[in-house]
Length: 194
Ligand SMILES: [Zn+2]
Image 1 (cartoon, rainbow, N blue to C red):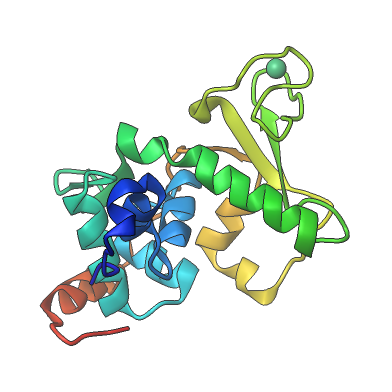
Image 2 (image 1 turned 180 degrees about the vertical axis):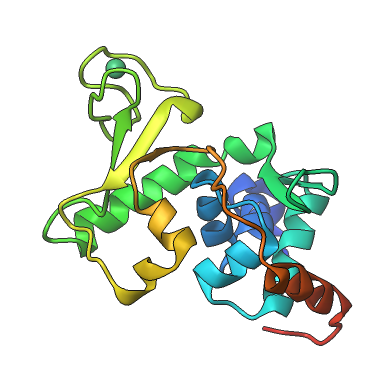
């Protein structure tokens, strides 16, 4: 399921990293984990991806230590970023910046602020008010001028993500039976899904 490595790739850590995060959907799963999504059913609803694909991606990310799968969580199984996973924030931020620059003429899709003082972050993640390189849990994201609301914002997970919130802060909502069933059926699925 990983990309084939070539001789040249052996000396390239970009190629090595892409074996982990370069598959379709993976960075979006990681983005949602930064935004507070933790449950299988919530990733599935938010990303609208086939459950078997989501199962495969989560499995690799857990295997590589990017996410931890916590079966003891109070609301059921949760997937959370490890320190290794949080280390991917500059990658996610850089892609967001790049997309805003070249594909979002009306401005940034999501603004990032220092939660303590409300200062906007510059492109390197430094608070323009206090000058601090803001740690990930103190970054607040909120819809920016380029943000377009859509019908899918009506679902509770999207709605939570699109409300100003700190990164990594869990999205709390009542557990639905379908989320649990979805995970079980996805886990049982063995078909190749991408
Ligand atoms: Zn600040």
